[in-house]
Amino acid sequence: MGIKIIATGRYVPERVLTNADLEKMVETSDEWIRTRTGIETRHIADASQATSDMCREAAKKALEMAGIAPSELGAIVVATITPDHSFPNTACLLQEEIGAKNAFCFDLSAACSGLIYSLVTAQALMKMTPNLKYVLVLGAEKLSGIVDWEDRNTCVLFGDGAAAVILEKTDDGNDSIKAYNLGADGACKDILFMPAGGSRMPASLESVQNRKHFINMTGKEVFKFAVNAMVSSSQQAMTDAGVAPDDIKFLVPHQANYRILKAVAQRLDIPEERVYMNLNRYGNTSAASIGLCLDEMVRNNLLQKGDKVLLTAFGGGLTWGSIVLEW
Ligand code: ACO
Image (cartoon, rainbow, N blue to C red; front, top):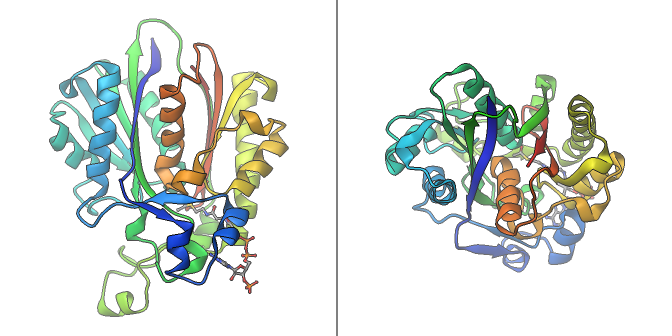
């Protein structure tokens, strides 16, 4: 039995928010944002668009590439920290939208590491479930709904989007995921979190007035943690897969900040030309970011059979994870 990635898809909203637009909203500059983060534009969902709507568009493209009907999906997993509702889960909403009536559905919350956590979870489920032939995994976020547009420390960083991956169980013994490493450190929960809206601080007039429903981040701490976590996790995944940095055709890191990505690549000894980046166009889309990269790479024919690809991410929790893929 082998579990293979057979298709990808992506969707980003039409509306583009530039650094010049942000200059009119908060005290910032295009130069500051570009040199500190590498971000030039990000896509922002309109008021009527929820995360499941973006999922639907990405899912349709992946289903088309896979050449399968929605009814053939046995499960849907949506990695997100911006679900349409606390419940029902976003995967259930998507199931109805696309008519995937035979799929069981759940969301997975691991912030920016969500897609990596979900791919590993999907593979494990497929290995232990006899009739689970196709699983649809998505990373999708409407971060614009939880960004404080008055806070220049965070609002320049984030964007919206959705990315889909379809896994198929095949008869040969080859898995796309050659090795993985997942980790978490709840002691660092306070450097990246959203204070209100859960059971700890339910929504109230006070929580809204005090702007507690937005991403709260200690940027410098996250930066340091991100580099260390992605480097050690990547090294462990490469060791477990029996590959060296030279064997990696592309490093696909979570698209948080150009300087973080550059530092990770340097410490892993992977030259920058083999690091896939699109954060200049999309900003940080959390769980969607690695999937947006993968779909671009697939549709631009950058990946050939047998290529080794290293995915690595970190996010709120804190969580982190890496996967060595063989295409
Ligand atoms: N425009 C202009 N000035 C700004 C802006 C802005 N948008 N934002 C902050 N500044 C100011 C700060 O106020 C500070 O001013 P001060 O020195 O007068 O206090 C100055 O710029 C320098 O701030 P630093 O914090 O030193 O800037 P730094 O170089 O660390 O960059 C950044 C900040 C971009 C946030 C960086 O720390 C970073 O990328 N951190 C990681 C963020 C990240 O990856 N988050 C992932 C979240 S993903 C998830 O799980 C949802």
